[in-house]
Amino acid sequence: MSITPLRTGHGAVPLGDAVARFLDRYRDEPGTAGTYAETLTHLLAAAGQNAPIAELGPPLYAVVMARWDERAPATWNKHLSALRSFAAYAIRNEWIVADPARHLERRKITQRDDQAVPQARLEALFTDDRNALRERVLWRLLYDTAARAEEILTLDIGDLDLEFRRARTRSKGGNTEYLHWATATARLLPRLLAGRTAGPVFLAERRSPASGKRARALTDIDPVSGRGRLSYPRAEYLFKQATAKLDPHRDGWTLHQLRHSALKHLAASGRSAPELQAKSRHKHLATLGHYVRLGEETSARLTADNDPLARHRPR
Image (tube, rainbow, N blue to C red; front, side, top):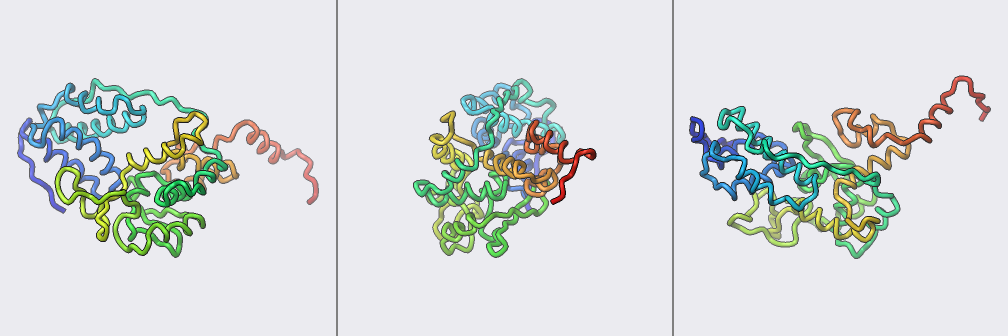
């Protein structure tokens, strides 16, 4: 591990050094580091690597966030949270005294009641050979594992255990956890890997530039083909394009809906909250409330089935 030494004193810390120190804290959490890096790359582009961090004010942060003005509220909120997390870190280190993003507000997310995709529509999507093999494997793997999209996209071939149909991942807290998939995914994965033994599981269409601003870390490049790791924005775009015709609203679905749908379908099949927690790896049962809330009919059936005065017929 290497840490870049920072110059001391308020206003003397270059933005590039501060960002490097901030991201280094998440070196064992590649998903989180990638999310923050996406936002902070645009901050660096707007201000410059050597800009004193104390001189970055609300106007600059507003310019950075304007990049996502036309995006969905969830996307806006994700990038705003990244800027605020970086600002909070800088405040704790006494590099700045106030959050430059303090005038920016989170946007309200309007939740639709149909976030869970019906299983029949998902199966039609998964079995449609007009979609590329890479996308079909990614979508099935997301649904089978009920994993977060970042966790799947950051998988390397060395993380896979094909014999036991599982993959090793890092949780948000840095713990090692396992994702499990079913038969359909197990049949497709070897076709996708095509004998590769190293590098990212999901590769971009083109070779990664060897130098320049678009160059990737060596761990994000296939050592044989030189292709880089498939990015979240690209994967999300392709999924929306492929699902627009299946979505009644014609908006297309998000990758997160595959995780949501998997858990919702498991809950509808009668799985308990602790079982869902084991599958989703949520830390708290309370966060599973919107998956296990099955409605009045379920409540009535449970009450009737457990009525102590009910006449139980012999089986």
